[in-house]
Image (cartoon, rainbow, N blue to C red; front, side, top):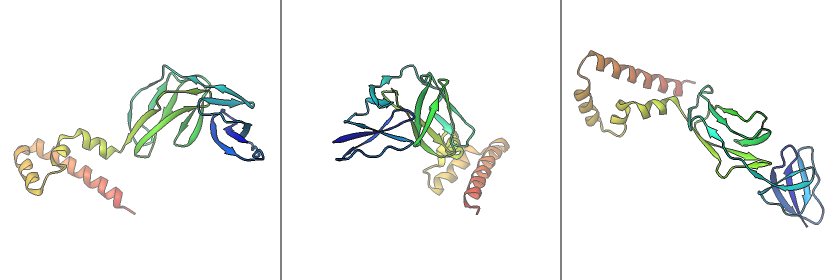
Length: 183
């Protein structure tokens, strides 16, 4: 016999088990006899087809990974669940504010009763990466040899203002290196 496991809170299918004896339920995981795929959700032991969520929008697809910068996901169904980095979050007002301290990509999946064709994907970048990507000084020297860097300085540092700008960039880079190597 095949059994389908699901999360009782939101009906999300969590797996299947083939066994002669029904697996035990827990406070969190429910069991239903039969095979039900990801196109279903289960509430109260009843399998129902999921509904496609449409109209979702994200305010921006990249945030700085500083725990402050926020991407706002709006247009979510009221009373839905999303999975973010393995955590299940109950959304009751149709919006979700996402922030992170970790660099990398994160995918937000709607689970349970609703689904979306594609997950929402947000890129979390470090402040240093953001600075590098937007600063022409970093772009000019990123893959340069020492001789090319010297030439770039000779051509681009021509007055006190450009020297100050380069010095500020160097000090910022030293600060980041210091913070990374500090205890």
